[in-house]
Image (cartoon, rainbow, N blue to C red):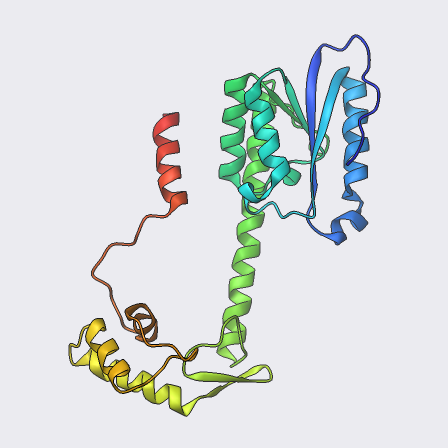
Length: 257
C-alpha cells in the first residue's frame, strides 16, 4: 500500500486519488502505481488540495467494475460524503467504457464532487472542463471498440483459414493449430440436423440420441441446449432473455431523465 505523506496545512478542498495498473507492461511504460501517486500528490500540492487518501487497484483490468475492489471503495467514499474532488493520473486509469464514465460523472455531480486528471488536464468544475471530460470519454470508448473489432476480425481470419480459435467446435478435433473433421461427431451432427429438418423438436432429438446411447463430447447425456448449438439454422421461438446489465441500464436511463 502506498503511504500518504503529511497533509498540507491550510487546504480547503479534500480530495481522494485513484490509481490503477492492469499489466506489467504499463509499469514499464511509465504509468506505474508509484508514478501515478507522485503525479497526483504533486498536482494536489500545486492546486492546494488536501490529499486524504489514494485508492489503488493493482494488476486489475478496468473491464469489470465490480471486480475492482479499489474502484468500489472509491464509489463508497464518494457516497459517504466529505470528499470534494477525485484526482486521476488519466481518465483511462478509471475506465475506457463511456457509459461507466458518464454514469460516474453524474454520480459525482449529484454529490458535488469535482473530477480532475493530470494527463489531459480535465477539470469538471466548469462546463468547458465537462466538455473535455466528455470528449475523452468518447475517445476512450472509440479505442475500446476498435480493439474489440480488430480482435474479432483477427479471429474470423484465423477461423477461415482452419486455425483453432477459442473452443473446438463440435464435429472437429485439434491437430496442432489446425482443425480436422471428427467423423464420429460429424455423424451425430448429421443425425441431429436430419431430425430437425423433419420437424422433430429439441426434446425429441434429445430422447433419440440418449435412447441410442450416444454421449456428448464430455461423456454425458444430451440436453436441448447442446443440441440447439449444433443446428446451424436453428431459430428459437422465444425472445432474447434480459441480462443484468440490460435491466440495470434500462433502470438507469429511466432514473436520469
